[in-house]
Length: 333
Image (cartoon, rainbow, N blue to C red):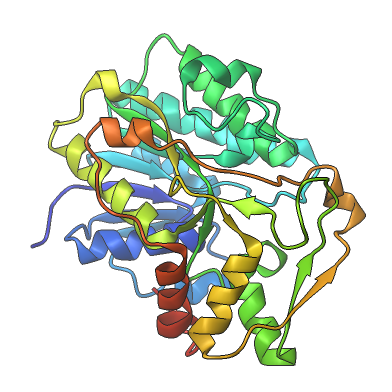
């Protein structure tokens, strides 16, 4: 059933954004305004077959919104500079803070619901835990410019005297899944593992450089992108139906709530290919060694408390689906 709501989706050519566009299409939302830098040929297959009413270049969005006669019903803001190895903060400031503030202010002025991507990178080394309480946001110490920029916007949003009608900032943990073929170094460990297995029959993982963690036992909250899509769609439906409560506005963790090791992840990738695991441990690059998270695990109580109770993929089931149904035949979502 086609729905007539108009939704702006930023980051629509990227990994998560393009999957979100397809998931919205699959659930009847075809009046999409896709926003991104569409000049990258490596991303073309991510977005070219999605149903939409327009593709708007990121730099042209402000002019488009000032001139359009379309009535926008909701904005899903997933666009960001997500490279954790980019240490020029001005780039993150422009794309992750200033641009997000513009979108927030537009949604506030027009009273349009907003769902935006924050990040678990805001939690830094986790010394304050992984709880999505608003009280802790000012105290967080992210480990890289990307995480800092995401936290700066969260802090700014929470201080605003006025806001969009409904809004949520979602702290994505380690997302993996289809449509990340273009990401190179920043692609998930599963994508890298799959390619290493095909090339050499083994996977190289970072050694541990922290006491208390064996090699390969660094822990992450790995989330299959399909679970993320379901959460955002649920929030979209709740907000558009005006079932969302303003009391529920705010920041939410989006993980599984269960940390798993990189070794588990790689073994699941081998299993998806029907191959016995073969793992080699290598030194971690110096440039990321002191900024590396050894443990992340989302506290998911807040999301459950507002009514989301769908089961999440296990690590094994998510990796198996990704490998079998996408990576092996280079399929897009």
